[in-house]
Amino acid sequence: MEIIFWKLDEEQRRLAISHYLEMVGGPEAAAADLRAAALLKSQQALVEHLSSDL
Image (cartoon, rainbow, N blue to C red; front, side):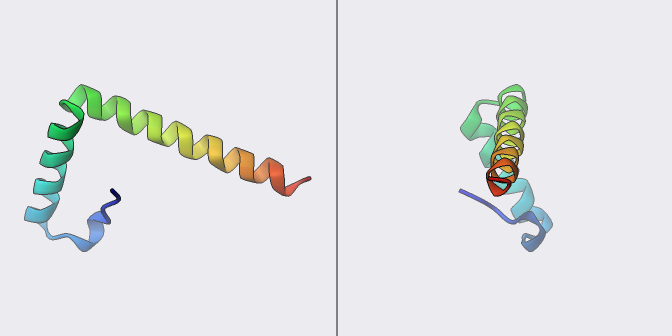
């Protein structure tokens, strides 16, 4: 599920973050999840870049 935070008001952001932290198991798990997502996104960008050169 993707949430566009800039479209949410402050209370909705807090609720979304709270739900996310509960869903993944706390702040440490959330940090690991976000790092993994960032790594995946950078890997996908690299693959797209390399594929466009073929």
